[in-house]
Image 1 (cartoon, rainbow over the protein chains, first blue to last red):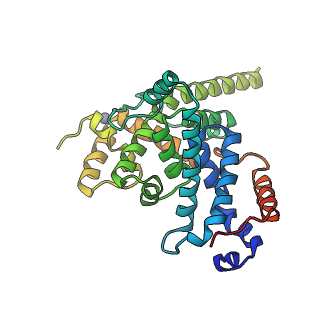
Image 2 (image 1 turned 180 degrees about the vertical axis):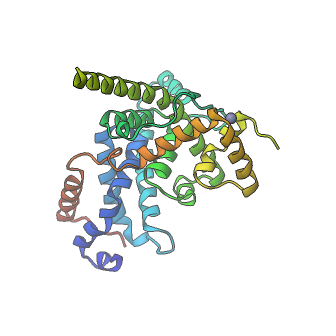
Image 3 (image 1 turned 120 degrees about the vertical axis):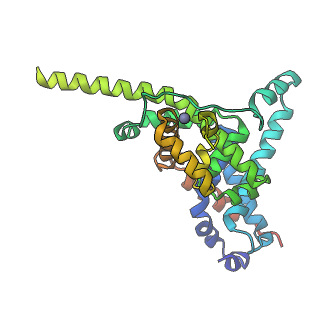
Length: 208
Length: 84
Ligand SMILES: [Zn+2]
């Protein structure tokens, strides 16, 4: 397939990238936060991948190579945005948003809350809470969570595309998951409570 | 070795990924079997991962694929080439 594309068969490139569209977009969105910018960055990443296709070496996975291009594209956009900011805003963004590998994260402790009932998971509102919480993670935790838990890359693959050690991937992923747990459990608890109240009301309505 | 709750929390992610050494796993499991707090932390974290993996949670914007392939077509028509 690659040989055909390099020989000039452009239609094959459309087919080649189809399985990776979502991953590239999610990686870009995870880094840039903004949907339309993430879409534009994804398109750019695919165009760059096409141009650079001759440099791809079969010993690495195509998906890993493609994701690295997407990460580079998103990073250069972030850098451009950063230089556009004023000094003071920039400093605030760095300390508050970049995250710290040495902070400790403790989970939310709610013993009366055990499982999210499956009907609660069916609600789009709950999925919205999760996507918002992921967007609000500090960047280093957001990117690892997207790669591992949203796009299901292996630990080794995630380490390779981010250029960090496997140990650091595990540490950051753990923190990212606990941060989400801490944020979401109290919110989801509210949702499930609302739901059971609604059900009780409906039941009453049927009875009377 | 008796694990305290806050130490068990450090292993939640490793536990979910099946990455704990057998001996540590036994200790963590023993704690989880008796501690309601930690098993609630485990269950809720697992649920979040289940929800994350649900294909309806993180979705491509409507028309993403069409717009991408149109842009590629335009670039090809404008003479985009692979570098040699
Ligand atoms: Zn405990």
